[in-house]
Length: 411
Ligand code: NAI
Image (tube, rainbow, N blue to C red; front, side, top):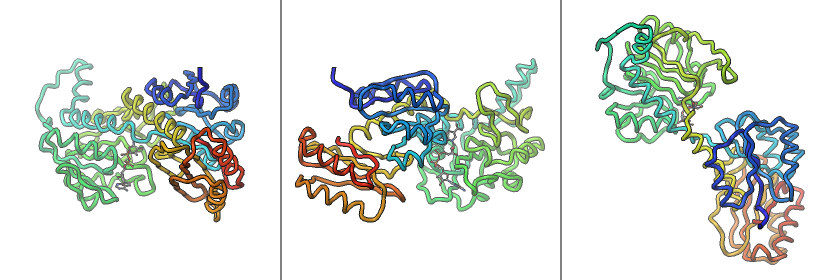
């Protein structure tokens, strides 16, 4: 059996959809169901035999600290098979030339679909009536129930989720308006609003899809809720601090707003099974969900595919498109010889030093691809000699020896 091109340690039950890309790239997969603490992670990585590059795939429980990075110099890449990357020392990885990939948009569709479902549930007061049925009450009435066809959905934040929701809502016959701080191309018949106030005054449903920034925190306070149409509904599956939940509770209790669907909260329990406290608890007009907007089997499968393809692409071709902590360099496949990938400290003179070494080797260069950001640069050099030519190994070693080089691989 030929030796693997690399090893990947997959922790925390990463979806099987990740395996295909690794198998295609000749990467040996070592999978575990649980996360590992710092010490156990170091031991697990260090116990993988051979000298082929190592990669690790984690979700939120395993932390890749500077200590792990120092203890495992064979580690070349980290896959965060989730959205967040707080569990990884991104700067520590960057300074050591270790690339980090995550999957920020794999669950976009899942969130948009939940919003559609909830808009209809709110329009028909389904949760309120369901709760009444559970209590043994028969609340059969058309009063206050509406079709969503022809109603106006106001989307705040027209990014990945907001724009996907726009398309789905139009398919239901809704009018879509949106507000974004960046000039965005309206999809379908959607219309951009010049201000948040304009959107709030014109919407039957307001759905928030902005990131958590100093501008968006508290963006929907008492004053903004008061600007919404009487009887309108608010949906928030973005970030908890975007909405003032005390003001929302008051608007719901007073009947100014007809309903709300809330998936994210200013304070969320840390883990499964912990108790959930919110001023919105007990408010029958509010649909409350435990931050599950993006939590579907499909999103998990997408994440598995997306991150493993990025890791395999980096391993095979040195491309860093989608990297969270390194400049993003892309390069078409090069079949006419071999390729050197070099991650370096971005200091004056670094490129000329590398080019001196390359030109001194006398090897013909077919192409160079470079991307830099602040302290670090990623360079791909395509050479017109085969990978097994000893001059290729010599050139790799000479580039790796430059004091500015962090990682240099022959591909
Ligand atoms: P994105 O980055 O693609 O889109 C965000 C949009 O908001 C951008 O178009 C941006 O220009 C706009 N924006 C930023 N500041 C704004 C402001 N002050 N006013 C108006 N627009 C503003 O992000 P994506 O993927 O669409 O995610 C949106 C939110 O959804 C994020 O907060 C994310 O954390 C959250 N999310 C929640 C999930 C859940 O399970 N509930 C799952 C996935 C994402």
